[in-house]
Image (cartoon, rainbow, N blue to C red):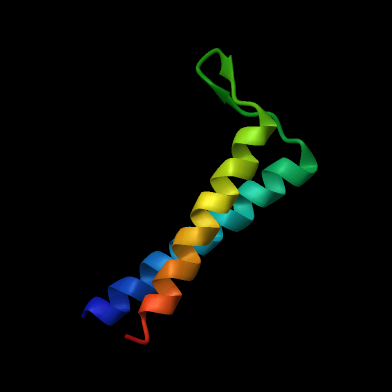
Length: 62
């Protein structure tokens, strides 16, 4: 059961990382209420989500 959880969470973090990279590369604007989220925040989120994705898939073999 935990192996499936690791694969699913790794895949979800991977998708989030790709979406954040797409947002940053295409300079898509993002508003939360009336606040505009800067593009650099997507680069940071991509690194964090990508790291969590890699960590999940590396820990799967243990």
